[in-house]
Structures are given as structure tokens and as C-alpha cells.
Length: 346
Image (tube, rainbow, N blue to C red; front, top):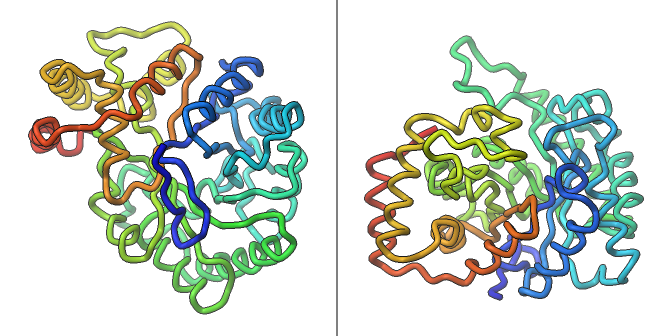
């Protein structure tokens, strides 16, 4: 499988990254371990997790279980060196971890130690902040009545956190630092502070990107290309919308839709119409719509790796059978026509 350099680091990661958000929830340990085995056999060397996982749904008693499952896989086979391992520090009001405390220098050491213990490893290749502390694009609109966070306090916190991350890097517990769900303004501050010597320069951002969610094209693309920051594109199937399984009012048992009635605001009338058109593109060119969605994201100049997940081994096998698909110029032209018709469906 093709590999790409992770930002400005010397780490090479596979074009696709195995996500783990359901492991320990609807996906039991044995099936999660089978997924890791299958992914590595297909040339995937990159696994992403988080201390918060699983989140389908989030429950206090399962926080950290996904990391434990990965740690047990390492303990059973000794293949830690075969995997580029990424995990995430919860923050930004995630109440199930540390009572929703913000990410601070004080929480970083505790969080790193907890992840290392659960993952049964001495180091984390890519350590990410799961959400910014400040309100960002999670809200429908940026507030008209002014900023919700003092930018001076935000920047001071960033600088202090970079210092704590540098201490972890020197201890050998983390190799590289990345963000998740970050904005262009936020990235500009992290990069500026790092270049001024506050701590490690971020090598990646894990943000949502799919045929239905094109936000990175509009605001972060220049950061990815000009600042040598890698996009780790999550939700490439838009939480299952782009598989077509929710068309016609379908609501499969144990699906994400069964737990999230509007898929976090993604399931809109416009999105379902856009999916209809992407299904037509796939049918016209005799390809699987899953392959269309995944390979479109992977082919983009700004994408370093595509983070996908699967609840079942059958779903994973469908994905693995599609990840080497080459999209022809004719397919890409039809995709662009759909985008023009439905540029921002959610």
C-alpha cells in the first residue's frame, strides 16, 4: 500500500488508517483483534484511537476500553513495532473524562500515562488533542455577540501545553504531536507558537472530510499544503450515509443512525439527495459507492491518510476490497458535477 510522510516528521503512514471508535462497544475484543490482523495483512500500518473510546454510545464505564483492547493485542503478539499508533487526549468539555476538564499542562502528563498503561506500550507515535478547549465549528454558527473565549487566554494555554508536550517528547513517551477538530485560526496559533520555540510543531490535523463534508477545502487546505501539515481525514463515509444504507428511510438495527437519529446533524434532506446522486455515479461506472467515497478522499492532494472504522468484520472486508480503486477522470468529473449541485448538504 502507498505510504505518505506524516507532516514534516520522518514517520511514514499508510494511505488508510484503521479507526477504532466502536471497539469495546458494539465491536467485541475478538472481532477488534481480527480487524487489526486483517488491516495489517492489507498493508495498513496506522491505527487511531482515543482515551475516550468507544463512543457508540459514550458511557463512563467504557472510557479507555478501546485502548485496553489494542494493548491486549500488542501483549499477545509483540507487534508494537509494526504499527504507527495514534491516540487522543480528551478535552473541550468531554464530561466522561476528568469531569470535562480542559486540556492543560497538568492533564497532559496524567493522560499520557493513562494511555501508555492501557495500550501496554512505552511510547505513542502521534499524540493528538481530541477537541480544542474553546468553542469552535461544533456550534452551528460563530457567535455574533463576540468571541466565547478570550484569545489571549487561549494562546497562553496553547503555549503552556506545548511546553508540557515537549517534556513528554524528551521523556520519550510521545514522538509527534497533532490536533483534531481544529480550525485554521487555531492551527495558525499552534504553528506560530511552535516556531517561536514553545514546543513541538504539529504534524497533522484529524478533521472530518468526505464527499458530503468539504469544509477542509474551504478553510484548511492552504495550511495542509503550505505548512506541511497532514490531514487525517475522518468520517469518509459520513457515518454510513455514503454507503447508501440509510436511503429510503432505512434504519438498520445496531447502526449509528439507531443511536443518533440525525447523525449529529449530518442526516438532512439535502444530504440524502446528494447521496442519491453519488449512488448514481457509482452505478454508472460500475463501482462500489464505498470505494468511490474512500478513494476520492484518499486521492486528494491535502489528504495524508483516511481514517475509517468498521463495526463488523464483514464491513471491514468490504472496505478492504475497495481501497486500491483508481478513480478515472470521467468518475471524478461526475463527482464534481454532484458537488456543484449539492456543495454543502450539512
